[in-house]
Amino acid sequence: MADKGDPVARSVLLLINPDKPDARAAVADVRRVLSTHGRIVGELEARVGAPAPEASGADLIVVLGGDGTLLSQARRCAGLGLPLLGVNFGKLGFLAEFDLQSLADQAGKLLGDAPLLERSVSLLHAEVFPRGQDESKFTASALNECVVTAGPPFRTISMSISIDGEPGPVLSGDGVIVSTPTGSTAYNVAAGGPIVAPDVAAVVITPIAAHSLSFRPIIVSDKSRIELQMERTNRGGTIATAGTMLVLDGQVGAPLAEGDRIVVKTAGRPIRFVRNPKAGYWARLTDKMRWGEAPRVREK
Image 1: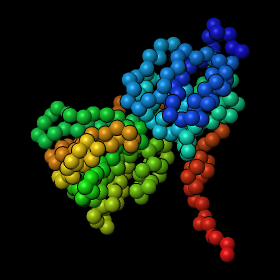
Image 2: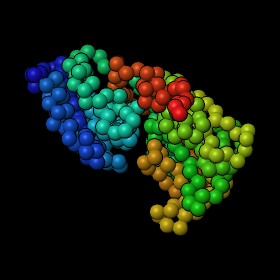
Image 3: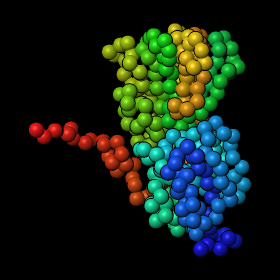
Image 4: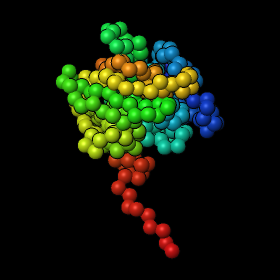
């Protein structure tokens, strides 16, 4: 067991999704693993929308949950500048690269003084400005994507697009996805957008059911400033049916009105994720998302 005063043992802030039964059940085992090779300096629930935690003395944040938990906690902890290690207790486990066994097997190196294998991931920063105003009414960040979705009553919406101040087309359809490379394997790929390797400095713009055969996804620089001017929106009747919305990572959002201007650009400080050296990106893409898998033929 590591000496509590050992300066080479990493200190961990542990964030646990209480809504994941498997994560709750594994807490005792995770505590034992972390305490054997390092030390735990704090333990909190991983809640969407919770304020940034106090992380004084921590070198590393370990998140127990699934990919959705890691998304919310990455946004929550963005200002701390600490690496995040995701331990998957969800369904897919594409972002959360470790499971309980791989954490236990590699804990000695992860919590020792060896350099962590990390990847830096850029966030998207989105602001919504009412028509003719310079003060935003909503601002938030996204790790995967910013989505403008038509919403109830699900009539076609439209918006004009500009990139770096240069006017682009007017998009009519069910909405648009502005995605990071990390998020390219999520909603973006389901809507027909391309998969972008995580180390590519880019942003993907993918239409959702565009009312045009010629509107295709595009990839722009991660230094680009993307503006969406809402021309036609759906008005919801209640809070539960808010109509057209801007939704970030499928977890937070704001209603949109005609004339609203949405500005999306890459946030200044990236998020640092601890990579699993035994589970490379392309191997996970093949294993988790069945990339390139041949069609299955049912035997008669």
